[in-house]
Length: 343
Image 1 (cartoon, rainbow, N blue to C red):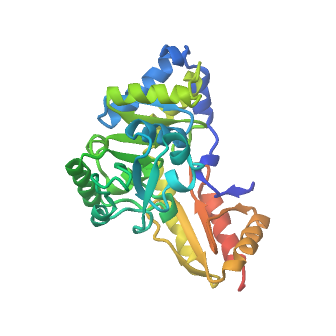
Image 2: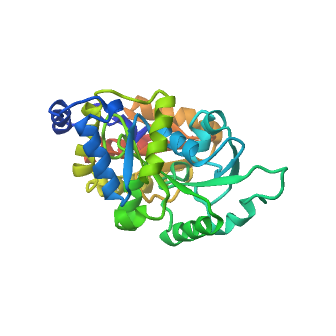
Image 3: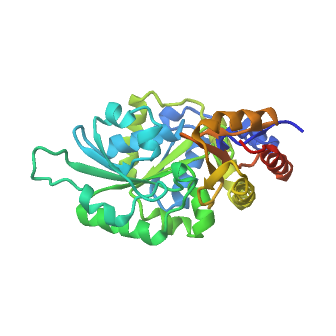
């Protein structure tokens, strides 16, 4: 059996059916908004979440950065979790692109708690402080081990933002993993946010692409920022077709990834070299080792046994299940994990 890659759900490869959809896609120039497949993808995704419009982009980083640029003005401040993707993994883009500062929140497993927001809000009459202009949440929370927000917390955050006149952005890179857990209707869920970034190239298995959703006026503004960032693609329908296929075929199977992640977590927590694992709700398993300095050794031992995972911080390893991890690959990983003795 070939190696099993648990580093990320971004490593998935298109299936033969997805590749066929890509090759059969009608194409046009998307910068002129004339690519019929891109237009169809954007309309499909917008309708799915009850939004007026959508914009197809190259990556989730790009959709997040465009959204922040569209919601804010230079000198403003963005409230986000200290472990959020927009802060930790987007190359300082908020400072560089939007010229905004960040108010970092220490919440539970990558999630902001509603009662934390009031203290994060700057006094708009105090000229020493930046104006609070945006709240951003991430569902599922990658650094929280794929943790899912409680719906009541999201509703309370939405109410806070509405009361304060603040837009609420969702980094929904793994939004469908969250929905597979909370069971919420996409349109009901979507109405809690002013803008949504959703990724097609993680659990859904498309090779490239993310979508930004919002009102028509917001997306019109976002389209201009996409151009400024060099994100205008021409015959992008060949990629958009993979996104349509993913949305139509690969959402319902996400519970299989979650099932396998739970089994992997149950194995890891029983090992003598593992101190704890983060609660496994979706497709991400984070193991905290007893000894921080053993992380690289364990990672290499697993690699030698054909199991790839990723270092996730001091003394932590992350495993992610996805559509290219079947039960055979899971069993190989379980056997490999059990074969590592005391460290």
